[in-house]
Length: 147
Image 1: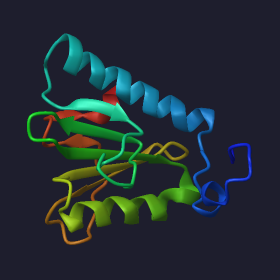
Image 2: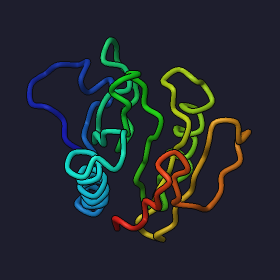
Image 3: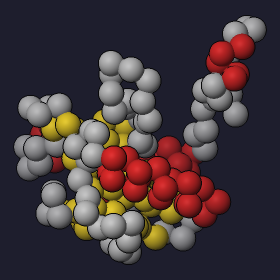
Image 4: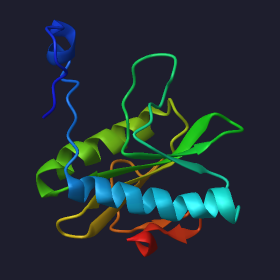
């Protein structure tokens, strides 16, 4: 984990270190690139893919690995978390909580385990139950095609 140089006790106390192994970042890059082409170049999707972006720029907020943002409504209908097996439960809990809280307009969340190549999807109203799927109903697109 990276800790900034200096003696700022708040940075260490708030655990603002960066956890970004190459395998993790590679998946985020592939998803961002594939979805970015569809948003920026072919205009085939209406949501902008933004990696490691705060959900609320007015205050400290959770940061999904990849957010798909609707720039017209300023909401984030889709989030994606990338993990390996050890982080799966925590990332799944984060996705479910963010969606069920209903604060940011998130309607669909995914967790991708790059060690097992397993996708889990959770949608608003699913009552805590996930499905094994990489298909986004909002985008009408299989996210796994970018990997």
